[in-house]
Image (spheres, rainbow, N blue to C red):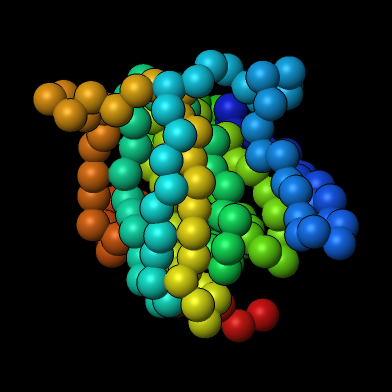
Length: 151
């Protein structure tokens, strides 16, 4: 796994009223600090990526649908520089992925329905000076193929 990336297997607790799933707790080993919480959605087959943050870590959970979350380490001096990791996460694999600052990331909705993603970044979003750098999903430097891989 890319240096600094952490995962937490999420436990879904069902009862006759519905389900509960704790995503992130302040006593989790991977918890750093809280900046804000937001939800975003991605339509089937759509890729959102690439982007990175210089100072913030993201704590990403897909709560509905499924996404392929892809991370690429382009950090100078990182022991895993150049490494790319994939995580299939969502309803069929409840998982939190902590993405450290400086790691390129993006995802593709791989479910037939819209995917709902919740993120609890460590920093508050600054509208006047966003901590974000972007590249197109087909960026040649990263060189990742978002297509279906047959095994």
